[in-house]
Length: 404
Image (cartoon, rainbow, N blue to C red; front, side):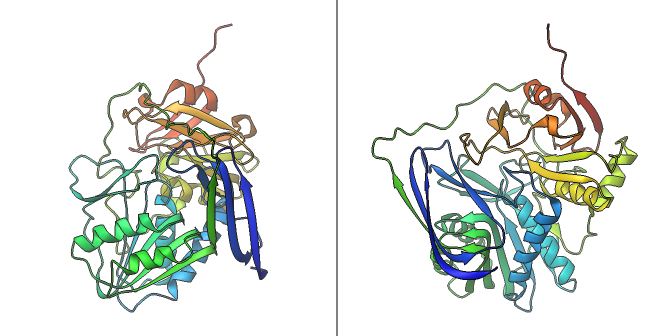
């Protein structure tokens, strides 16, 4: 951070004007603004370090995770730590903050759990919440596996999201945890950017009244939205036809989102562990001269990021991004966009943003589903892709030959 100064900037979108106020001038740009295809909220903060809508260097992503974890460390109580992230956008950074904390506080009982929109076979739902402004409202929280859930009067709850504007989503999850009878001495709300102007902390303080509540973020400020009076909001994208049966994750998949949690008492999986496993399954390692794009799918974010980080450590030019369910308009921030039917058999649209396949020598796609459900339009657009599925099977898919 260079200096502090009152800064106001207005972003003019098709649906209205978004004005942001902050007292920070940062060394690098942490976000850009884009326009949602969503009548509930027209604007979107697009992180430059998250790897969801803009390809990110794994080292820059890890640096952001470490900065957040360092901020959290100063607020930890002496007892155990329970970290939670939100699907789909914050599954990865939640896992990343937890990963950094477990490496710097190895003596702590610590666990990580994420919300999800997929309920695995054989897993029990713990409770559900709603994210009112989202394109996908419902969040499922599954019963955590042994060693994950940590709570008590000397415990710290760490809730992680990519950004917050009102604090309502944090409050929803806090209410759900409180309803389960959980107690914490401190609650830390973690975001890359916090535009709630104190409302998030206030909202959660009203729920965990006996706990000290604080916030950690890389950038803070306030926002104001002025909609155009004559603007006609577009509705959310409709349902789409799928080419596969409805998919449900398996609890013990080799590669999967951590829906039932990660316990610090479990062995830590490294990116090299992942690369070794897929190389044994037939993955041909990239050359150091290759430009490699590692792609996660939806909630399956953390293991792909670790793989990208390991490739980078080997000296390979690597970037990381994930597919998403977020419908966003093309514009200055979203310059490239491809839409395709989901490979979960649920009938929703998925997207990849700011990727030009011809710019990459190798594309690695990590998907929890099998290759049979991957839509032809997505594979044809990628051209050639190494696919690692939930079972750890490696396949190479190429674009179908087009008629002359």
